[in-house]
Image 1 (cartoon, rainbow, N blue to C red):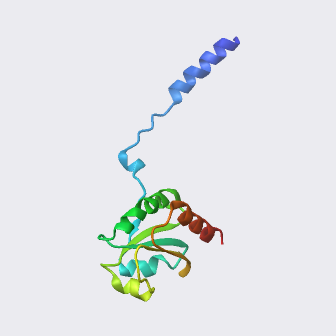
Image 2: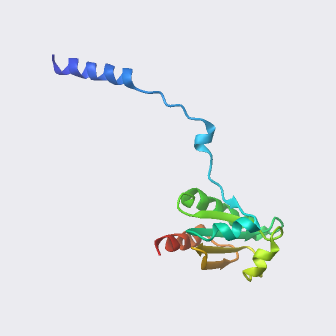
Image 3: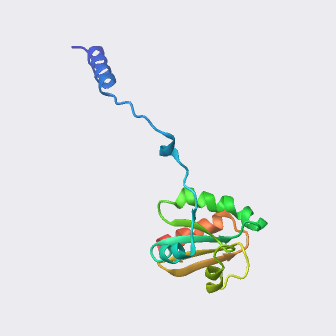
Length: 136
């Protein structure tokens, strides 16, 4: 058997053994920030790294920072919890943390505040804080 015959045989075997893999829309579902309730908040921040965006629907700067938070969820959602908490719905959480203005974004590491941001922040600044918390 010559080289070309072996190559043809290998190609035929490969074609016959190839599986067709089908994907559904769920396989490509986009990772989004998790919306937390008051009860979930205290539970979620206890372990690992969590970034929480404290926001309100009426807050224009909150909407300005939202794309960066969504991108963080896509890029770090498998390593950290990226979440949002509406301060109008859960004002006691904001009060307990001393949040006086929104947007406020806090990175927690194992239940402790690691880094706090007030106002609109860039993706880079937030990603650097998440990276620092993950590596500490």
